[in-house]
Image 1: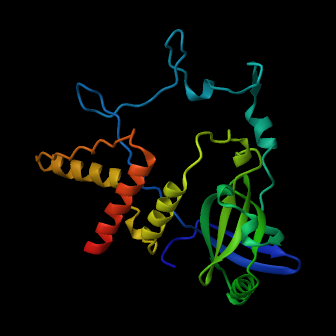
Image 2 (image 1 turned 120 degrees about the vertical axis):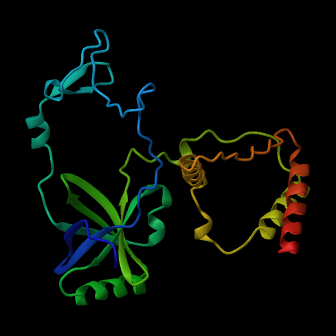
Image 3 (image 1 turned 90 degrees about the vertical axis):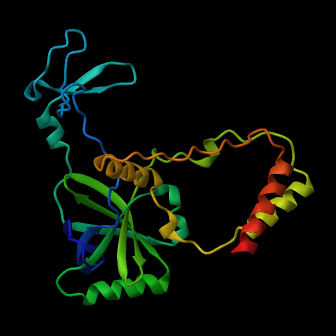
Length: 261
């Protein structure tokens, strides 16, 4: 693994103890801009100010407060908050093993790879066991003063640890208002099925590019070189087209693309 480990821990369940290193499985590629003064083009800094007087408040004069549902602000001291932090630990405790379908996609948050630390014998034995039994482990651990829950699963010949969202963060589909409208006729349903069948293809992850980021970098490179870049305008989409016509047009276009390919 070419990546650099960001944390070390030990997977524990029963009498099993597996030393591991944790690696980030994703990287942030968000486009970020520097804020400049409009006249001098010099970087500016953000400061905390009192909203009424506009007075700048230094960091050591700022206190934390939690706003209750009733609108009251409860001030909390740094010492009080520090006392609530979880005890430091290097244990990734597996509390149970469940079938993969038990943890649905909306619960997944951020993925990490786990690589072997020290001897890899116990590590690869766990990878093989999880893969053969088709199970995921439900884990709890503390990292950098924060407690996490996650799913331990295999990814090829490695282990992956995915942090999970907590109860109350995920909105169930049952909370949505059921859609309303007319019933679809058999012709529309048939064409929708044909369109889905015509669009079936292999998944190409490499095609999931951040096109906005690419356009920004192209613009930056061009402007740095004194060039002018003009991007084509997005085509206006028809929104009031009857469903049957839209399905028929989409199906025809898809078949033409397949035939030309």
